[in-house]
Amino acid sequence: MTCFKLSIKVYVFFALVFLLSLSSCKVARFFIFNFADINDHKKFPKREIEISENTFVFPYAKDEKVPKDLTIKGEKIAFKTFLEENNTVAFLIIKDDSIHYENYFDGYQASSIVPSFSMAKSVTSILIGCAIDDGLIQSVDEPVTNYIPELKENGFDQVNIEHLLQMTSGLDYNEGYSNPFGDVASFYYGRNLRKQLAKMKLKADAGKDFEYLSGNTQILGLVLERALKDQTVSNYLEEKLWKPLQMEYSATWSIDKKKEGLEKTFCCINARARDYAKIGRLYLNRGKWNNEQIISEEWVERSTKLDTSKGSAWFYQYQWWLPSKTGDFMAQGILGQYIYVNPNSNVIIVRLGKNSGKADWWTILSSLGQSYEDN
Image (cartoon, rainbow, N blue to C red; front, side, top):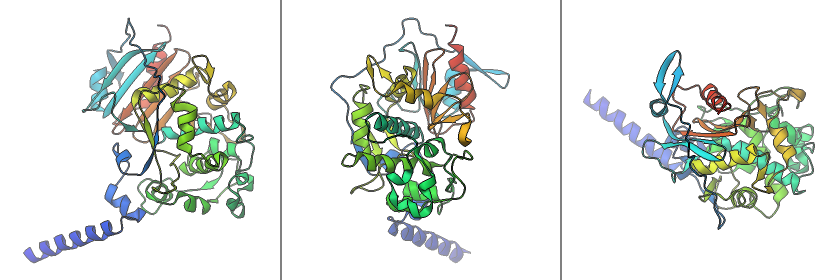
């Protein structure tokens, strides 16, 4: 029995050594890092995104309207307790440009970096809109192959930019997060996104059905990189959003490799809660920041309206989620990261967490947003 236990330990030891020796392999990194984690911003190479000299700071409301409790499945629970028990690390409620609630948990604070995960999809959409405003991309009706001609042989002439934005491209992509050999692992842990993108194929006609697939957003990232030519996607984010929105903190965007890497546009912007809130503020004000139109009002409207045409789902528009049919919208990340916006109540809510806990955040955020409508 002792020898058997020893042999198991030896086997495990050498197996780990073998995996570590394959550190350049995305499968090895999948097992070493396991699943998406709130500290993933430390694991990957990245590009810096700098702030401007002038920063905008949300003031605190003089008459704060803070929820005292929530009713969950018929039972009341203190608001702060609910946030703590559901693995929240940051929670902000901003109404009328003033902070009504701001709290951090489990050692996190205002300056703590938290990865965006798929909230980056919404940011990527904003940058596509900016590129159209700047004339770098002609329209959402352009075929993807205008920018990625190597996809012509895979049938992508039928796929346009709007299909990618709406997740209606018909892309053949495995979104399974627990599969080390799947597309998500290749995109998240792999070190050559351009090579992976060139292999993408279609399984259905474009414009027929909605299917949420991160591959769509990463193709958008390559479209954007090609449209920008000599400028990186991170530099464009800095120029179009981070500096104009007067962010408080610098940020980073994770890339696939150190040398000439490509931004992981389906995920992986690394920033702070208050700065995420400013992205919500931009869209709350229909693309305007103070007196400057940062992105066209038309783009914001198209990104947040109900639309079921051309295979679109009413609850997902241009990489933004619509949790209800009452006008609210949000960016969402896999670990329960949210930038929620309710124009009817002039409210922005940011929730960041280690995971979603057991909370139904769609319902909770919508209810909180609507609760401020009469205030």
